[in-house]
Length: 452
Image (cartoon, rainbow, N blue to C red; front, side):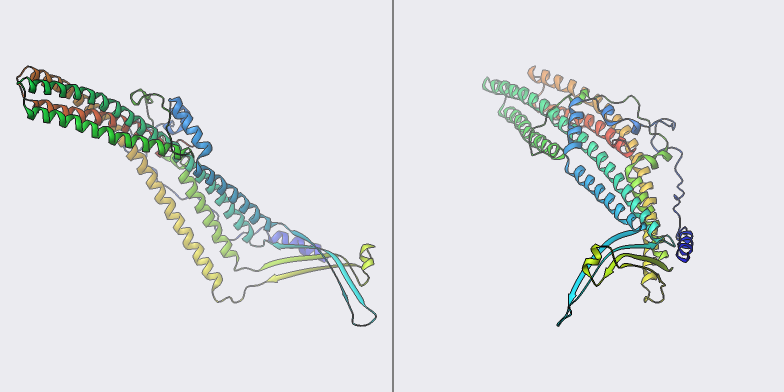
């Protein structure tokens, strides 16, 4: 009867939990992202699934392959499994543990020889009077959630990395096509200049300048081929495969873009970005560990019960004679530990403050990421439009310079100068078109899209 009353009292006391309960910090989100071109709305580009945002079937296939085989994805998955195991192990301390013990001995120098044996079941339970074990379980659960959010962040980064690398590859393809075509035209022009020089119409200076154009294009081809193959190797690495060629889908200029890129509400960013969610769960875990450290200042109770058989006759154990039992309760009262508990508590509070500041910093950083991405996307589009107009102008100038040279009105130096400007403008236009797509991907990632 006394043990029953004691257990009821202990169970009632076990409802106490010391330490602070977690409360999300107050964050003053701006009413609208800086750089947003439209009024804030619920909808966001981040709500779009990655396979809906990217309309290139080959790119979709590459991303799908990467999600299956990428090494970082596999590492993140194993970390989640490890965190799940840690939670299970930590939570087990909340429940009684049961073990079995069997031992026997036979001693004696002279007759009679004494034989002893026992078979016992041992049940032990640490009563969680002040919530130490529950707070530890809260911390382990939060760390598991943080690990899962980190895994989603790895997925998000992988989707963005594959997409940007693919657009880089299409950029190299487009530049190579243009430079190789330009090389053919320049070779034909060189043949014409040589013929004019041999006919006494041109000069060796014109020939040297024409050769300069050809050699510049040849050098450009070598550099672009290097970048092309290295980018293919990067994509294959992201896919968890050895270096090799990569298949292509739509050309760079045929890649569709969404008609609108709504940013959504800044306050929704806290629930959408995996890195913010992971950082908050780390803060939750640190908050729970403060409770663990505080509970260490209070007494703890350990209950142990033995039940079984003990006899000096080994046969008696098998016949279930000699029943034995014992119940023990131990109260551990902290008195003096040279400051260990106080030091642990101080450390836990400092770590909680550290994670709080890290969480607030990551939120400000996320708002900046979105603003930078919005500005980058908008200004890159404006730059691309201006570069398109410049390129068209230089194309016309190059045609007129060729006509003036053939007509004998100007020297080949004018052709050389306009051709160089046109080549630079054409390549800059191709890169600008790539930059628009890359800026779209970065905006998508900054808003928290890509991991769904």
